[in-house]
Amino acid sequence: QVHLVESGGGLVQAGGSLRLSCAASGGTSYAMGWSRQAPGKERAFVAGINWSGDSTYYTDSVKGRFTISRDNAKNTVYLQMNSLKPEDTAVYYCAAGARVGALDYWGQGTQVTVSS
Image (cartoon, rainbow, N blue to C red; front, side, top):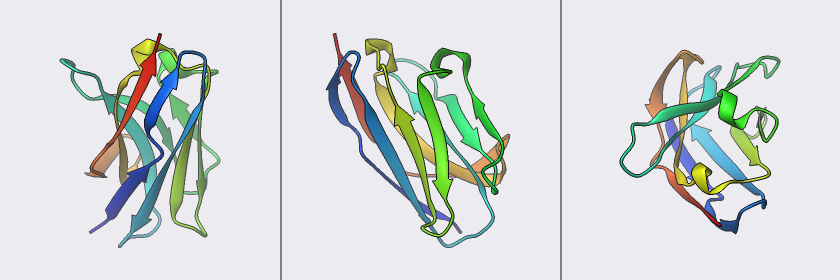
């Protein structure tokens, strides 16, 4: 069983930056990713990274602004978010699984609010 704990959310003005972190425990060799859920909307995939870190995936709306990375020595995955927009406001969830397309374990989420 994988346990995931997110941190780094908060309130930022449009155009600003935040870095989310997700510390994982209880498992090894997992692909990881981030999804988000805005008020009144379904949870949606944002970014994913394979175990080795040499393959990354992004939803179109964040390409060029967000960067996912991982440090396997620290069992941590990061989401660097730049040029934030009000529409990026959501609860961001970290996830882990056998592959990016099958993320089965979820963290509790961290709120990101972007003011205009």
